[in-house]
Amino acid sequence: QWTAGNIIDDLITRVRDTVGDEHVLLGLSGGVDSSVVAALLHKAIGDQLTCVFVDNGLLRLNEGNEVMQTFAQHMGIRVIRVDAESRFLDALAGEADPEAKRKIIGRTFIEVFDEQASQIDNVQWLAQGTIYPDVIESAGANTGKAHVIKSHHNVGGLPEHMKLKLLEPLRELFKDEVRRIGLELGLPAEMINRHPFPGPGLGVRILGEVHKPYADLLRQADAIFIEALRAEGWYEKTSQAFAVFLPVKSVGVTGDGRRYEYVIALRAVETVDFMTARWAHLPHTFLDQVSRRIINEIDGISRVVYDISGKPPATIEWE
Ligand code: XMP
Image 1 (tube, rainbow, N blue to C red):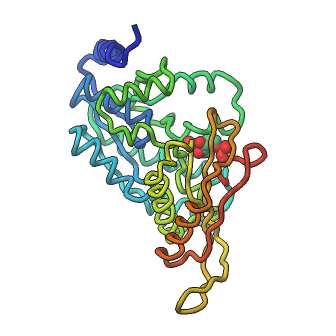
Image 2 (image 1 turned 120 degrees about the vertical axis):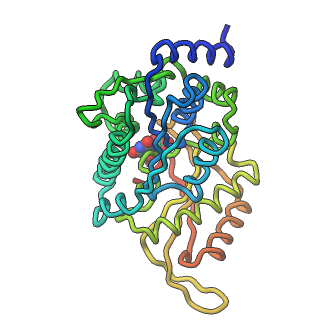
Image 3 (image 1 turned 120 degrees about the horizontal axis):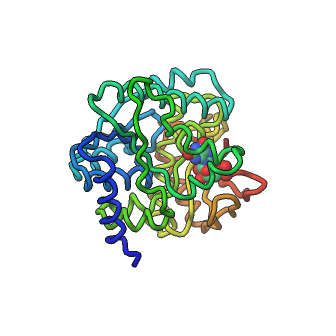
């Protein structure tokens, strides 16, 4: 009988049998799948698990601290946090092409992860948050993004001498099953029910060249939008919502005069499979509040627009 508890017991037995007393490394992104793997492995093998969390400087506001709080402080999992912001931003400098940016972010992730991994002694296993739909996707044609999606977390380039064996405990599970297991393992509902966040993070939500000041503005705008969606009950009613930074300046006027600042686009969609999506019909009063807050509270933003494009023909992300 399928209950989260039964499945967890079964998975734990299998992990223990497979791993024995060997050590496991996990790249923790803070997303649902890798978070559930972390919680599951911690329960199964405790201190034999070490997680590496790479802060690439393209995370949302407070995201790094929240991941550390949940996993390291709260759950007692061994997590190494790598502050790699300047490394990612340096690698991205001058690059404006979306796919080239994705490649740079993916490659840099692997470099940083490998360096950390090779400093940890005595690791035999690399754990990954692969779930059943990923298995199906990569079995099919290697077309476009579906394949790229997890590739930057696929640590294919691990140092030769490490020769890690792959551990994928969620390989047979669907997303909703992974969520139920995560809740049962004690992960916060807020984390389990989070909208998907792309691996390249804010790197593909800052159009064109990525600069730290842009990322800082975007983080603030995104936080205001998400906080308002949560407060008004819209977060659960949308499938994915976020802010996008447009590197164009627009004129505005406030009490003390003329402004000439950047533009933020808000995007919220409803979808089941993320292959097609419709833009969320958020109430005008709600959009009005969010827009006012963003422009009033963030120095450097003079205008907010709402994206009313469906997928197709538009994609969900802007890059
Ligand atoms: P699009 O923009 O293609 O997005 O309609 C569909 C879903 O995929 C996510 N996405 C990505 N996820 N790496 C990821 O891990 C990526 O490069 C990437 N590009 C898009 C997007 O957020 C949406 O959920």
